[in-house]
Image (cartoon, rainbow, N blue to C red; front, side, top):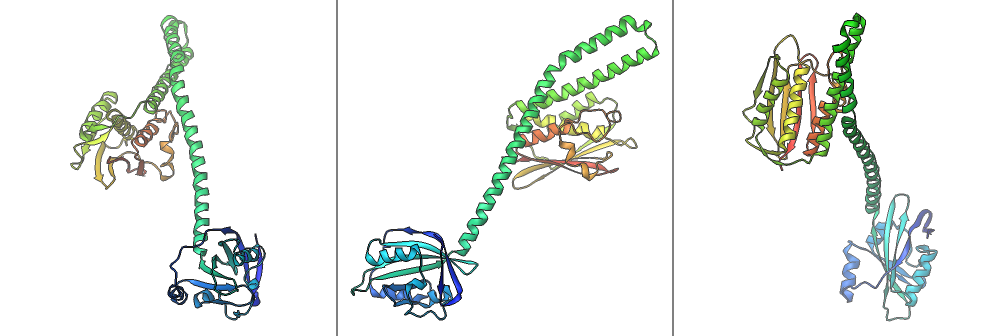
Length: 389
């Protein structure tokens, strides 16, 4: 129900903003002393409406409604109209014990009013009004609803992103298995062509075979990376105590096996913890990929150097892997962790663009995060956090 009623001057308007609500009579201490204490305290806006023209209100009620010239002899209809005056009449008649409603006062305030039947020794029926300003409560509720709507929108967006990521991961898994056989066949037949018909091929034919071999090699590398990404996604993350120092040193040996002839040095911080809780295999793959990435983009003007740092926070173990390579421009900091995103042509730096995406997936499976700081021509520092479970 909505109404506008006039109190005193025409410019002072009140609009009912909520339908009246019936409720049981309030259980309050009895006695005239309690009533007068409530009336005079100033903490509660109180008014008494008598059937007819006479009504009274305390100073707190006057201040709340900013009543400067409303006479106690004016009709209650100057305060209530529409359905609410009917409800008030039912209170006076004893049909209901009371009701609650809200009024919009002016343009910016909302007042909640409770109307309670009062037993009167005289034939004149009376009702007690208790009023309070609930404007802040309404503002908070509206802000909360807006925030909930915003969170719901973000949640829906997150679900879409998760579904898209899951579809991409499923594609990577299927593709890595379904592509192996045809690539293997291409490699085999290219080898047979070279073995049986090499003398019959001219220089251009042998060059074409060379292109085939290079493409097969690149495809095999992509399939291996897709397989690794699929395994990281599908394999369960097994948390156990592991030694970070052992992980870093073991992965240096693995990198040396695959990158023979690369001159590089590894420096470990003395602050490394003895153990952390992590998945041993996945943490090893994370470190291997970061080492391999640092050496892949090393500077050719000096020997490669990688230093591993560590700091502890209240919540996380934070590791850093710093290199002295070619560096990364800031606009590519987010791009490098995305699947298949490359910053350099394949002819310049080989690779599929999956290695750092695997790193991000592993860190997320540990409920951590990964980020990079870098300066082109100086080097890069990759950070990753592991929660202190």
